[in-house]
Length: 88
Image 1 (cartoon, one colour):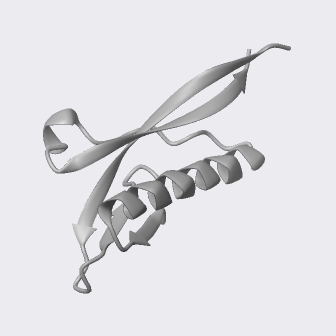
Image 2 (spheres, rainbow, N blue to C red):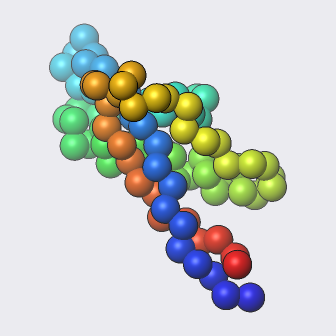
């Protein structure tokens, strides 16, 4: 069976922490929350966390989460793309 790359996209919310760092979370994936000292570190951490969450979801053969945020709600959000291989 041939594998085909599938790109998943999830919005990420960034909040400034009282210590000056950033908390990043993905509303579509409950519990997927990370911290970074810089915005770039928070971005890299949330990207890794989303990838790990997706792998666990796939292990348990559950449906992958779908993005629930509507674009006009997304003024202060960034989009994270995760590359996954799906069997076709």
